[in-house]
Image (cartoon, rainbow, N blue to C red; front, side, top):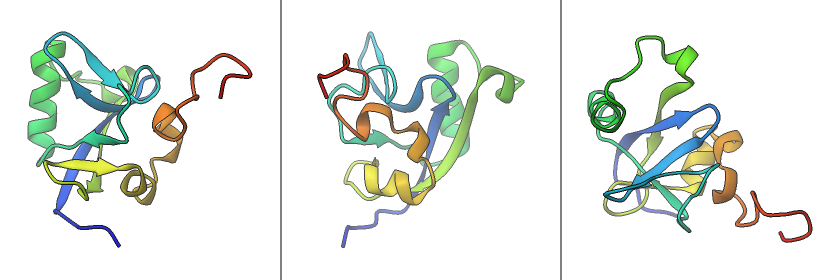
Length: 112
């Protein structure tokens, strides 16, 4: 049984997957480069998630669907505001897990 630290929101991009987190120079996404993580960053509110995207993208797109961005509520089950793979699956986000679900997700054939 995992701990429960409340509810948060995750950012999902149709092509890039789940927003994993960020360093000063790079953003990490589950279908692009999950940075070896097994959990993703959450935001305490939809407003803070949108603000975060605005800071590094210059604004939350007016047409979210066309831009491929969405926010989903998830259970925070890791200290520090992180949601595990299990929590993401429970929230119905399996199709967005990318390399979080399997380290060889984006590897060459035969390298999984």
